[in-house]
Image (cartoon, rainbow, N blue to C red):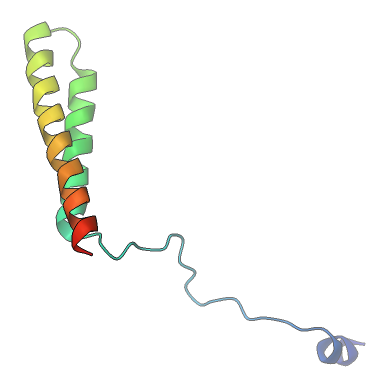
Length: 80
């Protein structure tokens, strides 16, 4: 019975290391580091609640980093 099934049904082998996400050609290590920094600054800004002055500083730092990150992404996409 098993021999008949093996001969009649097509089976495919599973890939050895399945890739969860396809990488993008224009993505660089610099972008990875900027992404981590930007996310850390966002969390820092969002968690600052008591001190309004410090929250405003964190907000400005985060938005500056966010705009640099977005500009770098656009630049890298254009280069590729």
